[in-house]
Amino acid sequence: MTNQELSNKILELVGGKDNVISVANCMTRLRIELKDPSVAKITELKATEGILGIVEGSPLQVVLGPGKSRKVYDIFVTEAGLKGVDAEIDWRANKEAIKSTQKDSPIKQALRTIASIFIPMIPAIIAAGLFNGIASLLGQLFPEAIASGKGAIFVIQNLFSLFGASFLSYFAIYTGINAAKQFGATPALGGMIGGISIGSQIVTISTVLGLYNAETPLKSILTTGKGGIIGIIIGVWILAKVENFIRKRVPDVLDLILTPLLTILTVGSLYVFVLMPVTGWISDALVWLLSFIINSSNPVVSVISGYILSAVFLPMVLLGLHHGLIPIYSIQLTEMGGVTLFPVLAMAGAGQVGAAIAIYIMARRVKNVRLQKTIIGALPAGFLGVGEPLIYGVTLPLGKPFVTAGLGAGFGGAFVMLMGVAANAWGPSGLVAIPLMQTPAMMLYYFMGLVISYIMGFIITTLGIKSQDVANV
Image 1 (cartoon, one colour):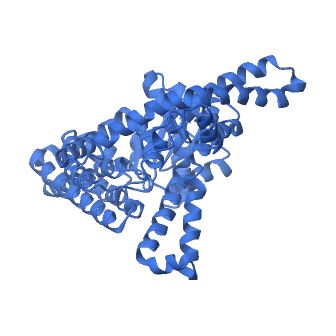
Image 2: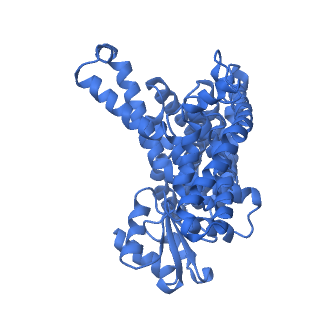
């Protein structure tokens, strides 16, 4: 089925153009806001060729896989004339989508808002991570060429390093811009808050005030980057409040001049002298905790924490709590030089793959053809790190395999944690994440972790369920 045919079919099964309020693209899926959700033919959607899974709710989520979802979204917007919601430019639509989830707790809503800040940056995070990884690899493979400062290898290595740094070096600014879109502030002013955090003048100010520790800069009360991502997000949230307050009280003729000037003067000063030191303490405490749990030199702690984190990650996804991990990824990347949490959690999807293979064998034994077809269609996506089809189409409906898959994934997580695998970025998991690991050895360990999760997910699922459990599903 072509993308055009698939888009037409989806539109037909959700009740036609008149039943669609808006459609948004989110990495692997379409989020379709419907006037009357009861009109949508969920069963037929799930059975449609090209659809990897359906997540019911508001909005209705149609899982198509990376790349394909964007192409179908473009057809919806350009040819069907539907209202498109681009998460990168329409913060109001994202905010309304969060509010529309009436049953969500305030904590879940806050986590979703945080996720909306970082999700639009994932393509750049992945690209920058890959470029940095390749640059590092070239430095290891051709040390003499790099040291000489001449030749094609030296130029390529520096070019790739430039590409990676163009995003990661200014990650604070991008975060400020996206946070402003979510909170309703002017994006450029949000970017200024992020830029303030990395400005070299911070050290000068801190030194004059006696807040800078020259011997150990990271232990300074105030220094460049203090407070990290946490401080920026809180700072931009305050920025939105202050900007709105000032704009309502400034005459229209002076709005363009006075509103941004007074807003940055007020919030920027508060950010430098209060928020950066306070959130810096919080960030330092979190880094210490992460270092103890995730980067522990004690192998027992590493194995236990790696197992638990991998085993419980997918239940966290179902509860929407996984969004809270994104700032932790960011803190690790900017303050610890690499993301060790992401490779561990990536094992959760591999456990699902192993469980699905075990279920497929049982489905063949009991001649459950429908389940066999579902698994065959979903497994390639599972190997590539797109776990929704296996979760919502196979393991979760069966119940027990969802649990056994997590228990199996824990073994891979324990191994990856024990070996100290770290990534240059985060994004899709599975096999496609191998190049994101920092060194060739880490790439190998990550792959070995996947294999361990495949095998243990398969073994524990085989032992944990019976053939009759899959006979009539």
